Length: 209
Image (tube, rainbow, N blue to C red):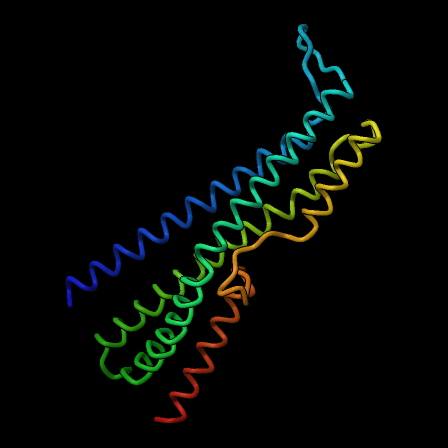
């Protein structure tokens, strides 16, 4: 039992670290893309001053479009990798939360068991929140691309460059997200939904006691 528990903890820790690393990488790609968009019309001359050139802005926007497409493709790959494991894992956590809550209530007289189940339940809640928090960061980072395009000096750019900006705004209007079995997005809303579902199963167990 001890070996199984240690192996399970190590497996979950590895899974979470890899997941967080990929999410932070995606957020970094979005941040670099936002910086490039907001400064697409700036170019330093040899004297250190800023000059405005139409060719520079056009090439920068084309570069941003390519990076944006690559970032969307990367998130799509993450989505294909994680949507089924997240579906199985979240379903398992909902059951575990309900059972842990039921055991915690039924063992109020035994303080040791009560504390054990309370710690276990808090660990599950932290784990669920962590995964949905990372998913929310993907949504927030992708939505900010639209704001960065709007904050750029698009009004000084040529018509051809402005048309390219419209393409980025159209693709970034719908936020990118990681899903649970392609049914629910990993976000704060899903975290609250998981808590409500676990509470419903907990009340069902209480009624059957």
